[in-house]
Length: 202
Image (cartoon, rainbow, N blue to C red):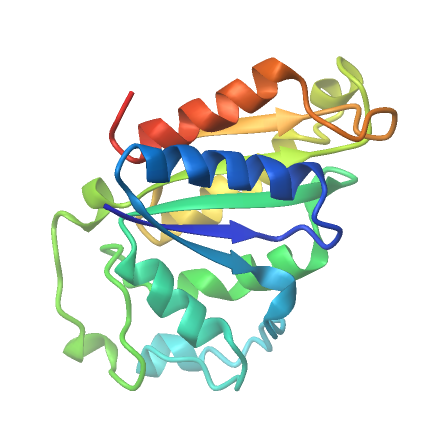
């Protein structure tokens, strides 16, 4: 079982620690986990040229093609991003804006340099790839849920990953981070539990 843990937090705070908790739990369950910090990569916004639709690869020369291939090689994804006013942060939105272009309608990854006719199809892709989503915001409950500060980024990620045939099987939203720098025990336990579930060990 290969898992890629993507941390989109700029400050390496609550989101980073929760992603690492899930990753360590997945490793303890026998999975091989690759860690990626999104802010260490160059990810630019889509220009709307639709080149990906014609050729299966993007003309923008940045780190996204390599990351997309690493996601394709993984069986599962841990994705953590902070929430800013009901949306994922800027670098995450740039990633999600373009990631779906790397997948065919079946969920099969477009390989760099190959067109849609050259891409092999696999019926089991959607069943094989799973994801968990971790987010955090400064607002306390019940305001965080009522105004969508945490549910908004989760929906964004679930939709974008789903277009690539990656099914989100669980999520964790840490709230009230403005007043507390850490996470509650139950939040830490849930992050670990999600990591074990993703690794196939409940």
